[in-house]
Amino acid sequence: MAIQRMMQGLNFLGGKTPSHLGVPLLLVGLLGFSPWVCATGLERILAVADGGATDLALRLLVKYEPPAEDQENWMQWEKERFAILAQKQQWGAIAKRVDNLPPGLPQPFVRWALAEAVNAQLSAEEGAAARKYLRRLIWETKPESMDFAKWRRLVIRSYLLDNDIADAHMALLRYKQDYRVDNDAWRLLHAKVLLRARRNKAAFDVLHDAQSTEGKILRLLAGLRSGIYKAPAVKAAGLTLAQTTSRKPKLQREAWALVAEAASQAGDDIYRVIGLERAMTLSSDASGRERVIVLKSDDLWQAYEWLAESLGNRLALLVGNDKAWVEQAQYYESEEKAYARAFYAFLSRRGSEAQVRLDAHTRLADSLYAEGRGEVVRSLYTRSKQFGSIGAIPVTVRYRLADAALQRRDIHLAARLLKGLDKAPPGEDPDEWSLRQARVLIYAGEFKAGALRLSQILDNKRSLDPAFASRYLQVVFDLQAVDRHPEAYALLDSVFALVDKVQQRREILFWMADSKNAIGEFQMAGELYLRSASYGNARGADPWGQTARFHAAEALGEAGLVADARDVYRKLLEHTTDQRRRALLERNIEQLWLREKQSMPR
Image 1 (cartoon, helix red, strand yellow):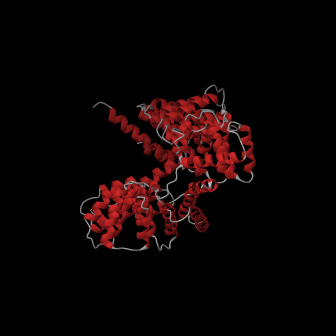
Image 2 (image 1 turned 45 degrees about the vertical axis):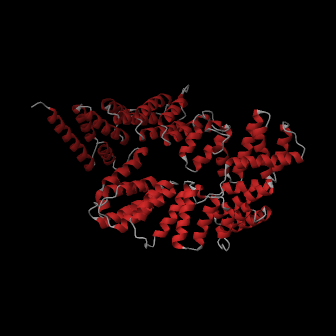
Image 3 (image 1 turned 30 degrees about the horizontal axis):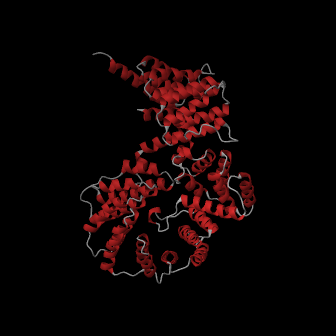
């Protein structure tokens, strides 16, 4: 009923509609216009997905997919659905589809779907769940299958994900016994298992003739850990590999991690810091749980402290003399930025005054952000044992982290960081800050907290600047979009009293009516639509007024005030010359007459 009402409103306006309803109406029209899809099939839906509207594409797939009995077409559509779900990284949704496959499908398709479920669970770092599907693949497939060996290698990988090194090693030995393989990919996997099992000499031997860059990194690591190679030599080799892998972030990350570990063994504090910072800056396609060199944020905190202590001893700086440490850190800022960060990290924990510690945190974060190392800041403050909760992170750093999260569209992290930060950061307008905070909370699903923040913005206000009021209303529309209409109505009512512009008040009455209409209070909705129609325009015959009257008539009809609804429609007819609009109004009047007849006692 609501969709029909909106579509009629759109038709009556001749395509014009209030701005915050435009996109939903277009989607409704698209979803409801089945000939558009049926005439062109799957290709049109894929075009929607390619255009970026993957959620819409999934809805269309659900609405128009062929029945499972039409196996050939159904399987084609299902493969495209899996591709879209993988693009959206909805790994659980892929597994759920596989768990509910219809019976009687061809075995090749079932095997393909099971393999997709395996890859999805591995991508989600769920090793045990991946093995559930791998068991079905292995038990239900002939051993001579070309994919059989690959599936058994994935079993080993799944154990590594779960940090089950004993079972990974056992599966590896059985695989080696059955296949007697000796290619580069196999040796890399074998070496990773051995390194995770701390059998470093054996890993070194497995990689004796490794030619790939990854193989060279792992062999250097195995040589370092087994004592075959000296730490300074491994550090130098790692630095060379870090330079040659500049266009391969995954491998460069491993090279810098190798540099950090070698520097740690060599007692080279500065290169330990540099290696950790650069490795933690780089992203990697590989699962974090599968990495042989594990980086922890607390390792970098410790590295900073060791470097600062070493430099401080050399410079005869006394712990507690904060001023001298700050001056030295500022001296390093121009050239040796890693030294400066080490000093700020040291002061953030060992400074004698609270303000010094807070300033040190701020300067540390600012220095890292200035070099494009925001990922390091996030790791240091959200994954360290010294900050047991978001609330323990220094406020100035939380502001910076929240801004960075918003830029990455990481709404949930941004909401966690912003929650409770009611005071705006220095240099920011408090109301604008609170408005942004409210919107983030709403987007993250914290509707109650978002509505409360919006309400707090209006506390003690006597008026609202029209431009700010417009921005404020956009966030209230977000509440309406998620059906939080009671909260939205209360906020709109408050804003109405704080703005002076006639047109703005007129629009607010319309949005208030929308919320009342959505929660079934049709009589109040009709009254508010009519007030909107004539507010500042006694006749209400302009396009806005006509639209408001149209919605008022619908609401009055729903409220059982059929005669009033009919009269409003008739007055609209007096000002309408467009034949399509007249036909719509006349049809609605006829429907009111039918409703009235239906309700009469017989």
